[in-house]
Length: 297
Image (cartoon, rainbow, N blue to C red; front, top):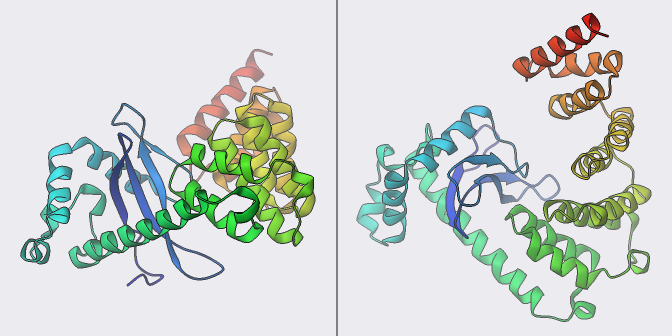
C-alpha cells in the first residue's frame, strides 16, 4: 500500500485542543512505516505551523490549513470514521474526505487512517508500560531511544523530557556502543529543544557530536544556538555542518540570514544562491537588504 511512488497521506487528529496532521514515514533502517506529526495548529488557534518532524510541501501544508479552517467538514469525516458502520465506511466518497486528503484514493486514505490509529495505540501502550517501570530497571540505550523518538514524533516533548530527566541523570555514566549512544543523546537534545530547555539541549547535542560527528547534529546544534540567542555560535555550527555535507536550502537560508544580520554579506552570498530556487521571495528580500547596506554603509 505504501510504495515509494505513493504520495504521503496527511491524517488529522485532535489532541489536547490542537489539530495534528500525521504523515507516513518509511524508517530508513527497518523499512517499517511510522507516523510523525508534520504539522499542527497552534494552541488556542486554527493557524497551522510546521513541526519539522516530517517533510511537508507548501501545497500539502496549505491543504492542512484548509482542513483546520473547515471545522464542520472535518467533524463529519470524524463521525464517519468513529461510527463503526461498515456501510458508511465502505461508501465514503472523495467529497467526504478532508482537504488534506486531496488527490488520495478513498480506499487508501481510509485504510491509512485505521492503520495509523492501530500503530498509535500500540505505541502508546508500549510507552505507558515503559513509564510505569523504575528508571534503573527500564533504561537501555536502544529501548529508551525508541521511546523518546515515539514521543517526539507524537509532539509530546514534555512527557519525553520528564523520562529523560529520570533515565539520564548523568551523561558520563551511560554506557553502550558509540553509534547508539550518539543517536540517544541526539534524540534527547531534540526533545529538550522542543521542550524549550535549550541549555540541556546543547549539553546533550554536544555529547552526541563528541561520540559521532555528523552534519545533522551540527545543524541541530545551530538551531539550538539560534533559539538561545547565540548567533555567533549558531553561525559556526552551521559552518561545521556545511563542511561535512553541503547544507540544503532551508538551513542555507537560515545561515544566510544570520550572516546578513551580522553584516557578513559576502559570506552570505553562496548560501543565498543555494536557497534561491526554494525560497525566491525570501532570497530577493535578503539581496535587497544587502544592496541597501552597500548604498548606505
